[in-house]
Image (cartoon, rainbow, N blue to C red; front, side):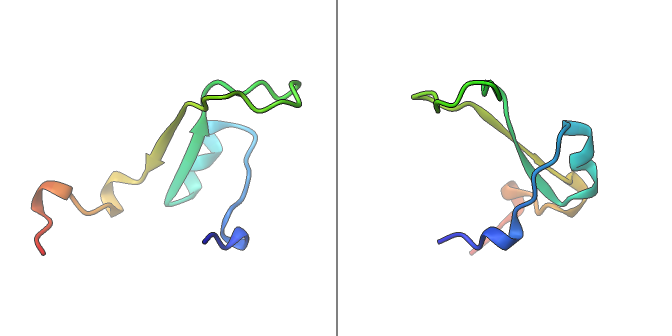
Length: 58
């Protein structure tokens, strides 16, 4: 379940610096109305505000 009020699009990857986290879609063509069968993306997060997974305990 997604709350779409939490998502905000930006025009450049550099603008993601003002957010805690973001997705960058690396292979989408904005002029193509079709969605490709496979979508490549990278996750951008603020490393200073992200808990290290190798130190996480249950």
